[in-house]
Image (tube, rainbow, N blue to C red; front, side, top):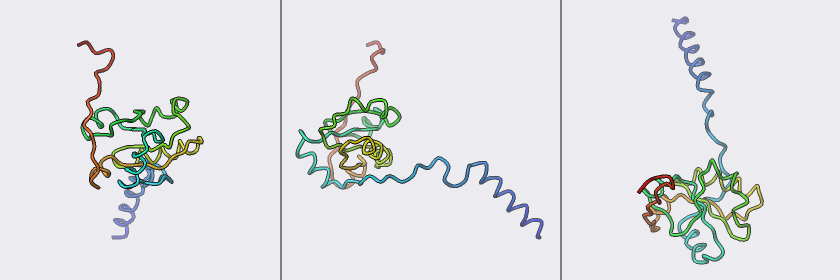
Length: 144
């Protein structure tokens, strides 16, 4: 019986080591404020002061919906486009459930941007907010 327990423990340890442990692939929790619908609506009531940066892929925006005006930069490209983001606006980052948005907000804040927080589009909609269905334009190299 003792040999069986030892074998089981070794198998579990081997499996855990192969996956890199329980935290592999998990980003550290974001420090960004996750905005509620009312907070985002208040910011959006001053469109000349706020900039939404949507970090989702175009297919996610078209499937789930988005906001009428936003800057689209996918999370993996954000650090390459920092010079294109105005520093005179309050930034709100957007993803589906605020995970990517939180990481992006942390990055932007560390680079000196004025970040109000992060929002999840699906969470916003579940709180009664209205998303807009937006069809992405066809890729530039696609023939019509």
